[in-house]
Length: 67
Image (cartoon, rainbow, N blue to C red):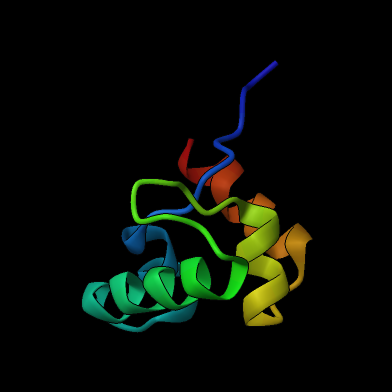
């Protein structure tokens, strides 16, 4: 059984959305503000999917491919 990562990084956002890695960093900061997280905390795939409107299955499918 392959373990799928639970957290999202800027490079993941870049690959999923087709935008730049810098955009991914900015988006992660916006998501952290939205969910009231501190700078050192991670963003989960569920939080990214909820904020971005991208289906969670698509995000998890991408994470399975790259893991």
